[in-house]
Length: 418
Image 1: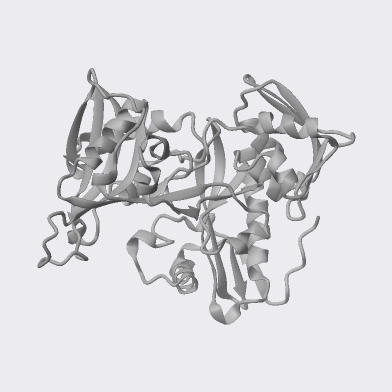
Image 2: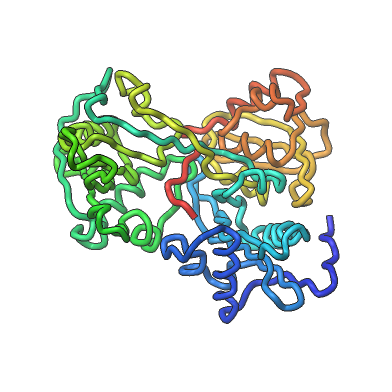
């Protein structure tokens, strides 16, 4: 459908280089940021990646979209990583976010970005635009003395620890491990060097946080797992108490190629004698420690919404991802913001690839684009969505077929925040 006519005095366009300081100010003002360089929306954002609303020449709404590549059930998808979305608090409730969203979706479609993804300050803002919460982030708070293992493999390799800054060639061994780890997964980003140095391996701004350490697990000289963490004294524990353990270990991320590598790294964490708490703030919902821990309650698990995903280009998105079964499905999709996604589609898939085309047939399933994001990413099955009243189904056989067709090997999870 055609986009709405702009109100008088309102313009939607990319910011230019001279306007990026205004972009930084409005985005930080709207998001309540205070100049933290690690969360600065402009440091690496190019002006042409922005979609802004101007009111009588004044920047009113900011909207950025990184040109990322993301693993989409084992294949590479071109994604718009939406960031720095905000409106001048004196100019809210005027529909400017919707204007920026509509124009950005047009731009993403033209760029060949089949998906858009974001982390939301408030998920409710974006779900009305077709974004769906497609991953969960787990948080752990573990006393290492409580961490014991059940039915876990016995590691036979060796562990080594280095300061991140001392690893040769910009930590090439870790970056190579990550590439292997991410290949079959769902939601992880293809990382350039900036995503490594500015986030994963970046030294803390607070010297008391301690240096960034990298743990490697190897077997016969082959690196099979890595863990990036910091460790320091916990200032919340009184120096005058009789408590013997007063350190905290914060795991930034890890990747592993074998179950033994995974277990070996957690055994290392559990063996830190001075540590009273291990913190991990962003584990995938299918993280193995939940099943290897002898007493899962001791993980003290919390859950937050993770990445939100929107289908921008339906046929491009669905033929990009990998499928494990031979199957076929005819379904109708409703999408008020991206009219090119609307219609009835026939999807034919198999391990060798997929084909999709619009058809003039009765659909087996009918859903909106929000629900399709849950199906396509493996977040929620068709049967479950039907129970929620989000899918109309011709029969139960079509639901079951869709469950198998859209199943993913791994839960969606993105370790980078943007």
